[in-house]
Amino acid sequence: MALDRTHPDTFYRLGRLFATYERIQRASADRELNRTIRDSYFGAAMTSPRGVIPRLARLAEVHLRDIARSKPGLAVFFEREIYEIVADVPIESFAPAMARLEEQARFALGYYHQRNAPKKDPCEPTTTEEA
Image (tube, rainbow, N blue to C red):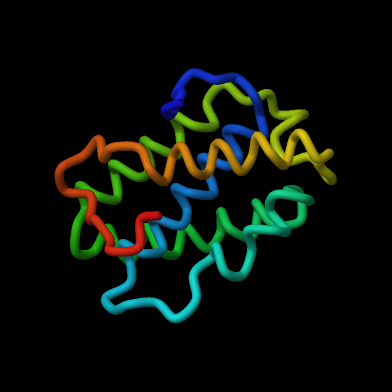
């Protein structure tokens, strides 16, 4: 099964969003990271999104600002990617407080689908740690 850019499930989209935030973090770093947001927040984001997603959104904005200084086109690409992911998610269900086990599975599925999807933009960096 491959990335489904139109799948309406909120948890699937939150997983995709998390993978995008991780790519943004990697793209903004000028060195190999010792610890990524995946290392720090994956479990918490999957089980209790409301407590983590706003924090990651703020962090992504800082990283996007850094990217925009050196690669403005890449920053625009990531901003569009984020918008495409969240555009159709109802406001009231965007960041639930807790996730049931099946919702956590959909989050993980969305994360891995997004993370391993072919790159849409040729200027997006590739990493040696894709899987």
